[in-house]
Image 1 (cartoon, rainbow, N blue to C red):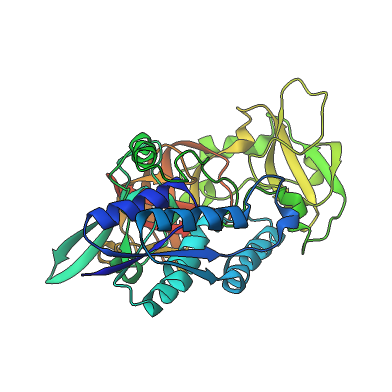
Image 2: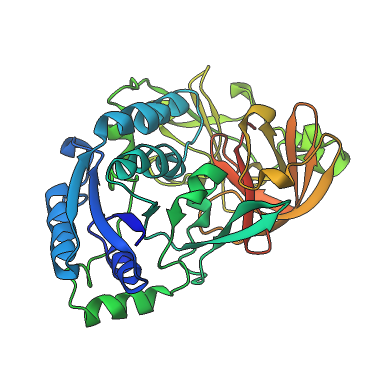
Length: 391
């Protein structure tokens, strides 16, 4: 009998995943991992690890499977949290959930599972794995979950073939309401627990307070850029992909000062809340961040042209293919479906491979392209690759 170690988080998805694995005939072991200890930065009522662990243990007892605990907080701080601090300090917007999956759940956690004799590790992610034989060798595909409203394949966009080989996603072909129904029918303690929100394993946080653990607050100007700013015309005047994929650059003299902030590195492109500037006809949105000058640039309204760009660029060192056999060669162009954030509907785009890296040119302008986030590209429902947005 093959042994599977499942990451029991204390949530309903991993609970039902454990049940499904038992029904499929696997020898199942539950493993709860604690990755965060500092409750000072989480909002009241969020991310109570003692409660999570108790819930996970109750589920294990109900399903009659062994239960283990592991503390991976040292790895998590070094490989996820420190990365976050570094990225924000550079004015970039990281996605810790993607990093958590690549560095913790399918690396540090996988290593712990192997110590328990696991043949596979499993999670409650809403995605699917398919296996095919190519040139006599098994190749693994990462496929969107059956529930379009809960598909979490984007969060796994950095997994490798080696990691996918050991991965199982037992609820990937089940829709969320059915998962809730199964949990209720089994009378699992997690049946009615709310889905977790916020940073993976940290919880819901006040981000500026969280970042101030290492990033120093520093007052700077909030400068408003008018919609008629002359540089916006460049999109209509060029077909040069290098120009189209470059963020708009501003100078403090290009607009007017409308307020103060406590550190440009605490903000991200497209953000509306937290500016504390009122009195404008339309809401203000962040359109650019200048870390060197400590300036936050804003524009009025959802349709402000500073929020939209037609293309982005990924440096060659940051390109990752989930399917290495599909790697693009320099000079090659392909049509893919792309998303630049979780839950964003897939966007039609052309991928262009150059010596310096990968350009992604969208059919339609994209709102809030942020450096540091991940772009993931799909062929149908299969996630083919991803990369960190360089610009």
